[in-house]
Length: 290
Ligand SMILES: [Zn+2]
Image (cartoon, rainbow, N blue to C red; front, top):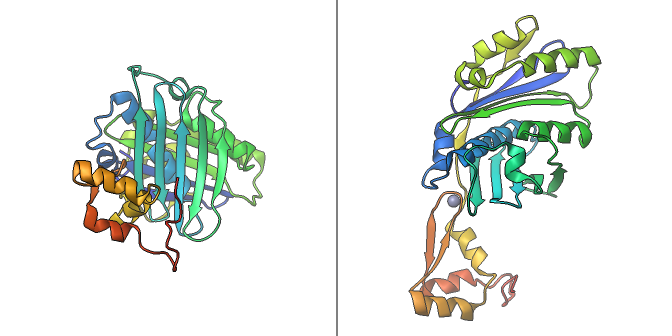
């Protein structure tokens, strides 16, 4: 396959076009693990993870890129996040009967999709991705050409076991002729799912661009990693009042916070509540109370 759990940037020496190719295997398995997703969800989540990894190569700072879809039918949420360190996590939520096979458009019709860039420091940015294409890659391509004015070609494939993606994109300040872009995007579009999933990166590149001058950068490792923590889980409990939490602990012995991404469970007993309601800069009240 495209090299497992690696992302590699592609450089076209004579063109203002950048690219990247990603292959996911262990990271994909770990994201799916313990969730019991049906095949149709495994596939769409694999594509979403590959897309998040590809788009994260555009991050210029510490932070994360989040692709999120809110659906209206059986699929309620699809989400994949990738940090600037290529740490991925993903989640799907659905309800009721799912089709055995469905296009991206069928799964999320009437829903909404957003790309969020969340820097560690500074303002977060969110862009709306119109769900107008049949596939996830078509939706993302139109987003980049319409909203970002960056012609982009994205190829994604996932079979429940492996996921892979390839992207080529015109650089923001580009001296390319349209012909250059048309040629490269046309070559990229000839890539078949099986090639993307099963050919190694060197072979892939040769197969597509052997008449171009292009190179692969050194590979970066892609890993599954959930950054949930006891501290963050404690913070999420501050949305409830101390009395409500004491009530639950009285009845159930502890308040449990489950991470939807990795299934970690954090339990808080009565003795932990002082930790949850740490006075904040002399402020006796929790920051948010509903
Ligand atoms: Zn987690």
